[in-house]
Amino acid sequence: MEIPAAGKLLLGGSLGALAGAVGVVRLGAAPLLLFRDALVLRAGDPLPDSLQHGGGLAVYSLLFGAATLAALIGLLQMTRMAAFSSLALILLIASGATSAAGGVGLWMGASRELASLRVVASSESPPKPDEVAAAIEYARAPARVGFAGLLAGSVLLLVLSCGSLKGNPHCVPSSVAARVVVGLSAAGVMGFSMALAATWFPMHELAIAFDAGHVQKPEEIARAISHTLRLSQLAAALLLVYGGFVILLGILVRRGSR
Image 1 (cartoon, helix red, strand yellow):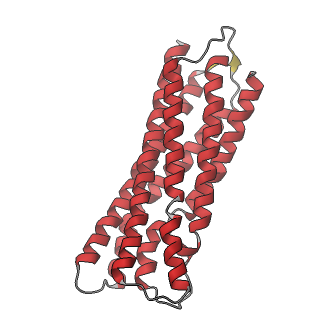
Image 2 (tube, helix red, strand yellow):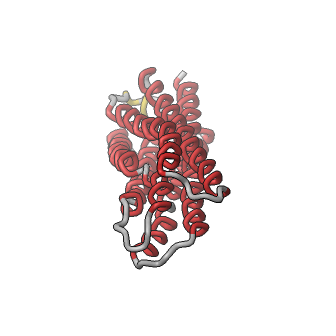
Image 3 (cartoon, rainbow, N blue to C red):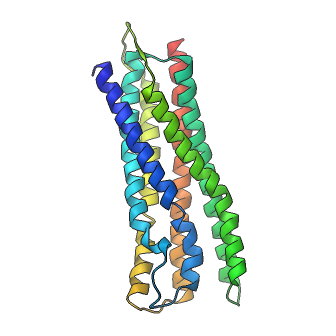
């Protein structure tokens, strides 16, 4: 694969990843808002946005994962065909760091809401609207940071792909360590996208039940919310793994360039 072809793959994947990240940031709060909407929703009421946006969130998350995978493949090819400048290495490591920070923020948001759900489930009285609103805001504060990290990681990867990398006259196959790290990064980002997309299933089941006018028991609603939040936790953890391995890749590339 020539440098222009690898560069186009990196650029195209980065553009797709940014588009997917924008969609995830726009709709990603749906699993968190489900805690509020499902508790107050009654059979026959119009479906709230949190139950309507699950499908869109799944599509954007899968787009983000597939496009980032393509970008990683192009990046792996570039490690043996091009010389990375100091700025390019900084961008690569910063992309991994912001993505990892995004995973931490999203994990904290889902964890905080799970803790609030346990308190509500153990209480004998129904939660008050102001208590639910406070719990949502408590969870969304770190989640906002998480979404910002996810978006920043994609932006930095796109900036890296737009840079001019000079050809390396001593082209050698990518090291085994680099290939392993890229493979683990790919597994992390695809796991993130698939886990986040899987939140659609419990949300869709609730949407079907409410739309059909079925009366849902509180424990059934709590179970669906818990399932959604646990999937969000898993997705956040895998985003952290992806970011960590991207940082490691940057370190390996830096050592190879030296």
